Image 1 (cartoon, each protein chain N blue to C red):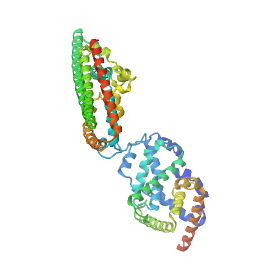
Image 2: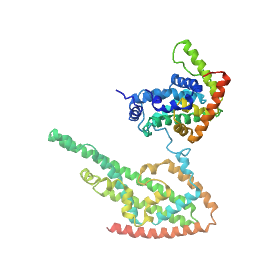
Image 3: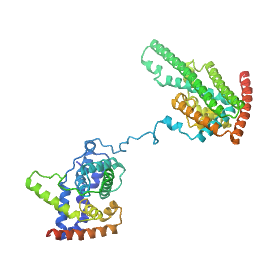
Image 4: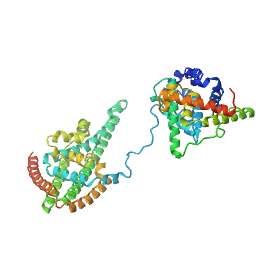
Length: 182
Length: 325
């Protein structure tokens, strides 16, 4: 019976257990694909695939616990994203969330609500700078701590705190403009 | 429970969970939870069970970072390097004593014969296979094994002949190239004479080895085929000529031409070397035209002549001694 503790899953994946590798992928694919999509990836699926390919290739060399692993995965995702930007040699474009998101359910109402949510999220994040958006995504979508966020972004914890503070202020202002009440 | 849930304890205290931002935070998290990923075929295959997680798949990389063919790379040696290389080689060749030449030739022949004999002994022992059969069958198998070993030894001797011949050709080519650089005809003659002597010594060494019984007697071959003794001609050379580095053509080859041991037939027959030599020859001709006034080169060449003459004398004496022995 496969264990459910994240560190156990990680250890099993490192030792080559296929179920554990699949479990890591299932747990992280959503956050990773959302992160790269909202960060402006032209082909989020491809960037995510490249990310996991490298993760699983280098898994045996990774050392650390589940939290460190999560930060490591997003570090790789960010690098693959940069690679993609270099490949296309273009400015990062805002990608409409409706373009590539598959709704979870088959219910038309749920899909419509998801579309509305995507649009709203996209609109709110569009008012942030690239760094602010990255900090917000790493904190919320990737579920990383301040320390891990700072590590992935290659900045100090203090710098991430400042980015986060300004991002929050910008988001509050945007919410007011959009007339969204908490 | 997901990894996200376990490591996200800090999120409950984060400012993103404040009332005015809670809705946005929730939407973002739902978005991540709902997001689907279309895995690439490569990732799908990896997830299907082909997990190269031990060392990772080795990427396909070129054997060399340099562009172009090996032939062109080798031919692209700097002219100065080629000139120095050949000058040093010829100087060493000219100073080669008969002892060094003989040892080199012996090592080449022994490597070839030993290699063949070693191959012959690598299979299962006939005696071992015949323990469960009749004595007659045992004798037949032993005879067959002996015949096979003999045939392989003969083939090895032929290979040694070919190697020596190729080595001689190479030496002559090198000498010819060096002769082009020589300031006068005497020096050129001396260089070519030195190369001829070296070839004769190689052939003489091979003839001596052919006379021995090692090749023809498989039983002896079995006993004498210590890989240490026969498979490493460079080592044999070291034993005999370490005291005089100048005399060892094998070392000269390694040091100055960036090629492998001369005993290897592949190197000798390598078309890259031929092309390299041709290219170097062209360069050398250019150099001769450019550096006629170079006193240093002339002095070096004069030294080469002196050394070559000394080497010839030594050869004569040593060969006479060898014949007497």
